[in-house]
Image (cartoon, rainbow, N blue to C red):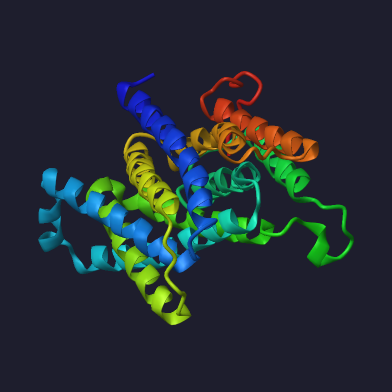
Length: 303
Protein backbone atom coordinates (compact mmCIF):
# COMPACT_ATOMS: atom_id res chain seq x y z
CA UNK A 1 0.00 0.00 0.00
CA UNK A 2 1.39 3.42 -0.95
CA UNK A 3 2.35 5.84 1.83
CA UNK A 4 -0.19 8.43 0.63
CA UNK A 5 -2.93 5.81 0.77
CA UNK A 6 -1.93 4.91 4.33
CA UNK A 7 -2.06 8.60 5.27
CA UNK A 8 -5.55 8.83 3.78
CA UNK A 9 -6.82 5.92 5.85
CA UNK A 10 -5.16 7.25 9.03
CA UNK A 11 -6.87 10.62 8.55
CA UNK A 12 -10.19 8.87 7.85
CA UNK A 13 -9.86 6.80 11.04
CA UNK A 14 -8.98 9.89 13.10
CA UNK A 15 -12.03 11.63 11.65
CA UNK A 16 -14.20 8.63 12.51
CA UNK A 17 -13.17 8.61 16.17
CA UNK A 18 -13.54 12.39 16.52
CA UNK A 19 -16.91 12.51 14.76
CA UNK A 20 -18.24 9.62 16.85
CA UNK A 21 -17.85 11.83 19.90
CA UNK A 22 -19.56 14.73 18.14
CA UNK A 23 -22.75 12.62 18.22
CA UNK A 24 -22.40 12.21 21.98
CA UNK A 25 -21.49 15.75 23.03
CA UNK A 26 -23.93 17.46 20.65
CA UNK A 27 -26.76 15.23 21.94
CA UNK A 28 -25.86 16.17 25.51
CA UNK A 29 -25.75 19.90 24.67
CA UNK A 30 -28.98 19.83 22.66
CA UNK A 31 -30.79 18.43 25.68
CA UNK A 32 -30.27 21.87 27.31
CA UNK A 33 -29.90 24.35 24.44
CA UNK A 34 -32.32 25.41 21.67
CA UNK A 35 -30.92 24.35 18.29
CA UNK A 36 -30.13 27.87 17.04
CA UNK A 37 -28.37 28.95 20.26
CA UNK A 38 -26.47 25.67 20.28
CA UNK A 39 -25.32 26.30 16.70
CA UNK A 40 -24.26 29.86 17.45
CA UNK A 41 -22.04 28.87 20.39
CA UNK A 42 -20.80 25.68 18.70
CA UNK A 43 -19.71 27.42 15.49
CA UNK A 44 -18.08 30.45 17.03
CA UNK A 45 -15.72 27.94 18.66
CA UNK A 46 -15.22 26.00 15.40
CA UNK A 47 -14.74 29.26 13.48
CA UNK A 48 -12.08 30.50 15.91
CA UNK A 49 -10.19 27.19 15.71
CA UNK A 50 -10.38 27.13 11.91
CA UNK A 51 -9.21 30.73 11.62
CA UNK A 52 -6.18 30.31 13.89
CA UNK A 53 -5.22 27.00 12.30
CA UNK A 54 -5.37 28.52 8.81
CA UNK A 55 -3.44 31.55 10.08
CA UNK A 56 -0.68 29.40 11.59
CA UNK A 57 -0.39 27.39 8.36
CA UNK A 58 -0.24 30.51 6.21
CA UNK A 59 -3.37 29.43 4.32
CA UNK A 60 -5.22 32.73 4.79
CA UNK A 61 -3.04 34.18 2.01
CA UNK A 62 -5.08 32.06 -0.42
CA UNK A 63 -8.09 34.31 0.13
CA UNK A 64 -6.54 37.12 -1.90
CA UNK A 65 -5.79 34.74 -4.80
CA UNK A 66 -9.17 33.06 -5.16
CA UNK A 67 -10.68 33.08 -8.62
CA UNK A 68 -14.32 33.89 -9.27
CA UNK A 69 -14.99 30.20 -9.93
CA UNK A 70 -13.45 29.23 -6.58
CA UNK A 71 -15.58 31.83 -4.79
CA UNK A 72 -18.67 30.28 -6.37
CA UNK A 73 -17.48 26.84 -5.20
CA UNK A 74 -17.10 28.13 -1.63
CA UNK A 75 -20.57 29.68 -1.84
CA UNK A 76 -22.06 26.41 -3.10
CA UNK A 77 -20.33 24.46 -0.34
CA UNK A 78 -21.60 26.94 2.25
CA UNK A 79 -25.20 26.39 1.16
CA UNK A 80 -24.77 22.60 1.06
CA UNK A 81 -23.17 22.58 4.52
CA UNK A 82 -26.01 24.65 5.99
CA UNK A 83 -28.52 22.03 4.84
CA UNK A 84 -26.26 19.09 5.74
CA UNK A 85 -25.32 20.23 9.23
CA UNK A 86 -28.75 21.56 10.20
CA UNK A 87 -30.31 18.23 9.23
CA UNK A 88 -27.56 16.35 11.08
CA UNK A 89 -28.11 18.13 14.39
CA UNK A 90 -31.88 18.03 13.92
CA UNK A 91 -31.70 14.23 13.58
CA UNK A 92 -29.47 14.06 16.69
CA UNK A 93 -32.09 16.10 18.56
CA UNK A 94 -35.12 14.08 17.38
CA UNK A 95 -33.83 10.49 17.60
CA UNK A 96 -33.39 9.52 21.28
CA UNK A 97 -30.39 7.21 20.83
CA UNK A 98 -27.40 8.74 18.95
CA UNK A 99 -26.19 5.21 18.09
CA UNK A 100 -29.36 4.68 16.04
CA UNK A 101 -28.75 8.01 14.27
CA UNK A 102 -25.20 6.91 13.51
CA UNK A 103 -26.28 3.53 12.12
CA UNK A 104 -28.85 5.23 9.89
CA UNK A 105 -26.10 7.56 8.72
CA UNK A 106 -24.52 4.64 6.87
CA UNK A 107 -26.75 5.61 3.98
CA UNK A 108 -24.06 8.25 3.38
CA UNK A 109 -21.18 5.97 2.24
CA UNK A 110 -23.56 4.16 -0.11
CA UNK A 111 -24.59 7.47 -1.66
CA UNK A 112 -20.95 8.57 -1.88
CA UNK A 113 -20.09 5.31 -3.64
CA UNK A 114 -22.89 5.90 -6.14
CA UNK A 115 -21.81 9.51 -6.58
CA UNK A 116 -18.21 8.41 -7.09
CA UNK A 117 -19.36 5.97 -9.74
CA UNK A 118 -21.65 8.26 -11.71
CA UNK A 119 -19.98 11.65 -11.19
CA UNK A 120 -16.30 11.03 -10.39
CA UNK A 121 -16.19 7.96 -12.70
CA UNK A 122 -14.77 5.66 -10.01
CA UNK A 123 -14.87 1.92 -10.82
CA UNK A 124 -17.06 -0.59 -8.97
CA UNK A 125 -17.79 -4.30 -9.01
CA UNK A 126 -20.63 -6.72 -8.29
CA UNK A 127 -19.52 -7.34 -4.69
CA UNK A 128 -19.48 -3.59 -4.00
CA UNK A 129 -23.06 -3.42 -5.24
CA UNK A 130 -23.94 -6.29 -2.89
CA UNK A 131 -22.28 -4.45 0.02
CA UNK A 132 -24.29 -1.33 -0.77
CA UNK A 133 -27.47 -3.39 -0.84
CA UNK A 134 -26.63 -4.83 2.61
CA UNK A 135 -26.00 -1.35 4.01
CA UNK A 136 -29.35 -0.09 2.74
CA UNK A 137 -31.09 -3.23 4.03
CA UNK A 138 -29.62 -2.57 7.46
CA UNK A 139 -30.93 1.00 7.52
CA UNK A 140 -34.38 -0.33 6.61
CA UNK A 141 -34.25 -2.79 9.53
CA UNK A 142 -33.17 -0.04 11.94
CA UNK A 143 -35.85 2.42 10.92
CA UNK A 144 -38.81 0.07 10.41
CA UNK A 145 -41.50 0.44 13.09
CA UNK A 146 -44.04 -2.14 11.94
CA UNK A 147 -46.56 0.50 10.93
CA UNK A 148 -48.57 0.35 7.73
CA UNK A 149 -48.96 4.01 6.79
CA UNK A 150 -46.25 6.29 5.41
CA UNK A 151 -46.17 8.28 8.65
CA UNK A 152 -45.72 5.24 10.89
CA UNK A 153 -43.61 3.00 8.62
CA UNK A 154 -40.24 4.43 9.78
CA UNK A 155 -39.07 5.83 13.10
CA UNK A 156 -39.22 9.59 13.53
CA UNK A 157 -36.16 11.27 12.06
CA UNK A 158 -35.39 8.68 9.36
CA UNK A 159 -36.31 11.07 6.54
CA UNK A 160 -34.11 13.77 8.06
CA UNK A 161 -31.12 11.38 8.15
CA UNK A 162 -31.79 10.46 4.51
CA UNK A 163 -31.81 14.12 3.46
CA UNK A 164 -28.68 14.74 5.54
CA UNK A 165 -26.92 11.88 3.72
CA UNK A 166 -28.05 13.29 0.37
CA UNK A 167 -26.71 16.80 1.01
CA UNK A 168 -23.57 15.41 2.69
CA UNK A 169 -22.88 13.34 -0.41
CA UNK A 170 -23.23 16.38 -2.67
CA UNK A 171 -20.88 18.38 -0.43
CA UNK A 172 -18.39 15.50 -0.31
CA UNK A 173 -18.21 15.18 -4.08
CA UNK A 174 -17.67 18.94 -4.48
CA UNK A 175 -14.97 18.94 -1.77
CA UNK A 176 -13.22 15.92 -3.24
CA UNK A 177 -13.04 17.64 -6.63
CA UNK A 178 -11.56 20.87 -5.25
CA UNK A 179 -9.75 19.92 -2.03
CA UNK A 180 -6.25 19.92 -3.53
CA UNK A 181 -6.55 23.43 -4.97
CA UNK A 182 -8.47 25.08 -2.14
CA UNK A 183 -6.96 23.04 0.71
CA UNK A 184 -8.57 21.44 3.79
CA UNK A 185 -7.85 24.49 5.98
CA UNK A 186 -9.67 26.97 3.74
CA UNK A 187 -12.57 24.59 3.12
CA UNK A 188 -13.01 24.03 6.86
CA UNK A 189 -12.88 27.78 7.53
CA UNK A 190 -15.44 28.45 4.80
CA UNK A 191 -17.77 25.85 6.30
CA UNK A 192 -17.46 27.34 9.79
CA UNK A 193 -18.15 30.90 8.59
CA UNK A 194 -21.36 29.95 6.81
CA UNK A 195 -22.65 27.79 9.65
CA UNK A 196 -21.94 30.45 12.27
CA UNK A 197 -23.67 33.18 10.25
CA UNK A 198 -26.66 30.93 9.61
CA UNK A 199 -26.94 30.07 13.32
CA UNK A 200 -26.86 33.75 14.31
CA UNK A 201 -29.60 34.61 11.81
CA UNK A 202 -31.78 31.69 12.91
CA UNK A 203 -31.31 32.60 16.59
CA UNK A 204 -32.81 36.04 16.02
CA UNK A 205 -35.44 34.86 13.53
CA UNK A 206 -36.74 32.17 15.89
CA UNK A 207 -36.55 34.46 18.89
CA UNK A 208 -35.40 31.74 21.29
CA UNK A 209 -34.90 32.71 24.90
CA UNK A 210 -31.22 32.20 25.70
CA UNK A 211 -30.58 29.20 27.92
CA UNK A 212 -27.65 28.93 30.32
CA UNK A 213 -26.13 25.72 31.59
CA UNK A 214 -22.55 25.10 32.66
CA UNK A 215 -22.69 21.45 31.59
CA UNK A 216 -24.25 22.30 28.21
CA UNK A 217 -21.58 24.96 27.60
CA UNK A 218 -18.83 22.49 28.46
CA UNK A 219 -20.33 19.82 26.19
CA UNK A 220 -20.62 22.37 23.38
CA UNK A 221 -16.98 23.43 23.70
CA UNK A 222 -15.71 19.85 23.70
CA UNK A 223 -17.99 18.82 20.83
CA UNK A 224 -17.05 21.86 18.73
CA UNK A 225 -13.35 21.11 19.16
CA UNK A 226 -13.93 17.50 18.11
CA UNK A 227 -15.91 18.60 15.05
CA UNK A 228 -13.06 20.92 14.02
CA UNK A 229 -10.68 17.94 14.19
CA UNK A 230 -13.15 15.60 12.47
CA UNK A 231 -13.96 17.79 9.47
CA UNK A 232 -10.33 18.82 8.98
CA UNK A 233 -9.12 15.21 8.99
CA UNK A 234 -11.96 14.18 6.66
CA UNK A 235 -10.83 16.82 4.17
CA UNK A 236 -7.21 15.71 4.57
CA UNK A 237 -8.25 12.12 3.86
CA UNK A 238 -9.86 13.29 0.61
CA UNK A 239 -6.43 14.58 -0.44
CA UNK A 240 -4.99 11.04 -0.38
CA UNK A 241 -7.79 8.54 -1.04
CA UNK A 242 -11.11 8.39 -2.90
CA UNK A 243 -14.10 9.99 -1.20
CA UNK A 244 -15.91 6.64 -1.23
CA UNK A 245 -13.05 4.90 0.61
CA UNK A 246 -12.88 7.63 3.25
CA UNK A 247 -16.64 7.50 3.82
CA UNK A 248 -16.48 3.72 4.16
CA UNK A 249 -13.95 4.00 7.00
CA UNK A 250 -16.20 6.57 8.64
CA UNK A 251 -19.10 4.11 8.59
CA UNK A 252 -17.68 2.18 11.56
CA UNK A 253 -18.35 5.21 13.78
CA UNK A 254 -21.56 3.50 14.86
CA UNK A 255 -19.53 1.16 17.05
CA UNK A 256 -17.87 4.06 18.87
CA UNK A 257 -21.16 5.96 19.18
CA UNK A 258 -22.86 2.84 20.55
CA UNK A 259 -20.30 2.63 23.36
CA UNK A 260 -20.37 6.36 24.06
CA UNK A 261 -24.18 6.51 24.15
CA UNK A 262 -24.28 3.71 26.71
CA UNK A 263 -21.61 5.38 28.90
CA UNK A 264 -23.12 8.89 28.79
CA UNK A 265 -26.86 8.30 28.45
CA UNK A 266 -27.30 4.63 29.40
CA UNK A 267 -29.21 4.16 26.14
CA UNK A 268 -28.93 1.08 23.97
CA UNK A 269 -30.67 0.34 20.66
CA UNK A 270 -33.44 -2.24 20.48
CA UNK A 271 -32.25 -5.69 19.43
CA UNK A 272 -33.56 -5.32 15.87
CA UNK A 273 -31.90 -1.89 15.57
CA UNK A 274 -28.59 -3.30 16.76
CA UNK A 275 -28.89 -6.13 14.21
CA UNK A 276 -29.72 -3.60 11.50
CA UNK A 277 -26.73 -1.48 12.53
CA UNK A 278 -24.40 -4.46 12.29
CA UNK A 279 -25.84 -5.26 8.85
CA UNK A 280 -25.11 -1.72 7.65
CA UNK A 281 -21.53 -1.89 8.95
CA UNK A 282 -21.07 -5.33 7.35
CA UNK A 283 -22.37 -3.99 4.05
CA UNK A 284 -20.06 -1.00 4.09
CA UNK A 285 -17.06 -3.17 5.06
CA UNK A 286 -17.84 -5.50 2.15
CA UNK A 287 -17.74 -2.43 -0.10
CA UNK A 288 -14.42 -1.39 1.44
CA UNK A 289 -12.82 -4.83 1.04
CA UNK A 290 -14.05 -5.08 -2.55
CA UNK A 291 -12.53 -1.70 -3.38
CA UNK A 292 -9.26 -2.76 -1.75
CA UNK A 293 -9.13 -5.79 -4.07
CA UNK A 294 -9.77 -8.41 -1.36
CA UNK A 295 -12.32 -10.15 -3.61
CA UNK A 296 -10.37 -9.54 -6.79
CA UNK A 297 -10.51 -13.16 -8.02
CA UNK A 298 -14.25 -13.38 -7.55
CA UNK A 299 -15.08 -9.86 -8.65
CA UNK A 300 -12.83 -9.21 -11.61
CA UNK A 301 -15.55 -7.51 -13.62
CA UNK A 302 -15.43 -3.73 -13.08
CA UNK A 303 -17.94 -1.24 -14.39
